[in-house]
Image (cartoon, one colour):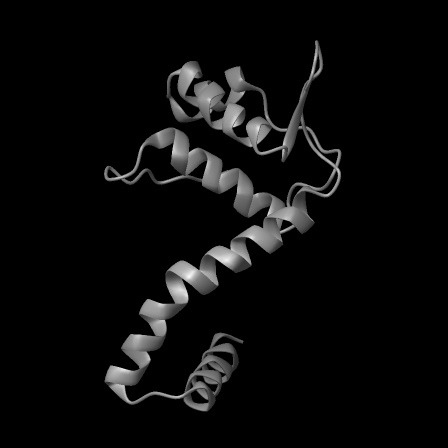
Length: 124
């Protein structure tokens, strides 16, 4: 994991978001072990309690489970649950702002799709 910390958001929230992104992107699959608290703390020079707090949120959300003596593991159905909740959050929290900005700028979906396709072609 490569992480650049944002000073405006608590580190444990950023770490939680990174693990969520890894699950959504398929980097971490159901049953995969998360890096140990000690390893993450050492790698990023952060307090182990910060890592534990991020991991505990994932446990509380039933995305990760603790296995005594073994570590933390991605639960079955975690990706599906995350997709549903992240889509819902996007539609209710992010999309209205994006849509309003599109309207102010006079953009439509076709223009955005064309711009994205052009970006893909230029990146290749």
